Length: 107
Image (cartoon, rainbow, N blue to C red):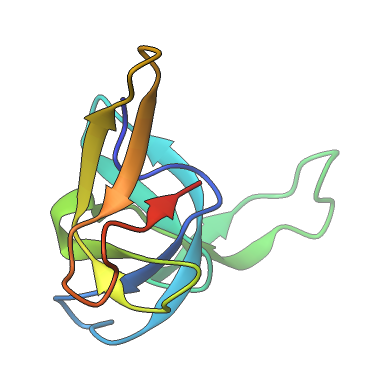
């Protein structure tokens, strides 16, 4: 089970964007990276195509290593590490490990 999923609200904990928050747009599990909305912006020079006839310079989000983000628990609004526990029925649930989360489940 992945600890960070698409749609999670995360806090950047290191690098140039430290302290910024954003929503995970994409998870790249093979590279252990995530793409976060509005964070780690890079300029991409593109030539004209049928999809983008004028071409030009686009600003896109670049991937960040997964170890540089912490998931923000939705109810307590605290950045936390994520644990996975197995329930009695065999299903897995993610939960916050921070003391202020009190084992809060993260959906």
